[in-house]
Amino acid sequence: MFQPMRYGLNEGLEYSTHPLLFFVMPNISLKISQKDMKGYKTATRLKVFYPTPLLNMLARKGVGGLIDPNIVMPPLLGASGSFLASKTIFGFSTTFNAGIDLGVNMGELDQRSSIDLPLVYHRLGVFYNQWGLHAGVDLQIGLVKNIKLHTDIDMRLLPGISQSNESQFYTIFSGENVVEHKLLFIWQRSNNFRFMTGYKFVTGQYPYGRDTRLLPYIPMLESWVPIIEMQWAK
Image (cartoon, rainbow, N blue to C red):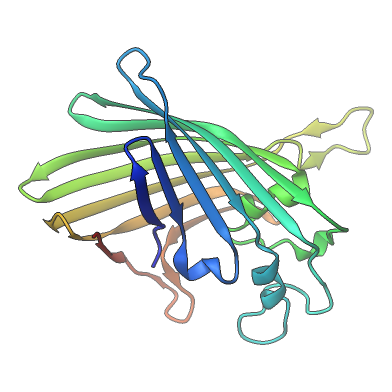
């Protein structure tokens, strides 16, 4: 439900898409293997997504409405390119990634349509800023038989989207940034099934100021609950 469906065409090319989101936010990602570099296995990842149908669905009153219903979102096309380098370091399967995100607006985008929520604002912010940067590292290690620990830390930047001291003779472009961290315990039942649980931590700058969240968070309970996810392979 939360991870993309992946299909390996061959040893050097993998397609992936979020199947549940595809019908309201068409998306596709390609991961292409590259030559090894100084002991690192490398790859590039290209991603394209079209969020306009989903955003127009969220422009309504009542439950599920996150955007002013009077706003009509123009066609938006997001693209992302990443370089990945993987290697085993001190027993950890380690993957570094870095890249650039681009947002193309094919019409006038109302600034009031911004969704100022964790995991959403900085990903859709490229459409208001036209570009952004991302970087991170993933670590995975086996603890005991069939149980692994996976953790990561990622940063996203929207350089220049915020401004301060406009009344002065100079302008400071502080930028918008977010740091995301995830910790998962993974039980590998078999080659075709695994169960995982953990948390997602997010801290960053938003239009209303800095905010920190531990996710998943259920507003009705005003409480954090652990991630519970099951994955199948075939």
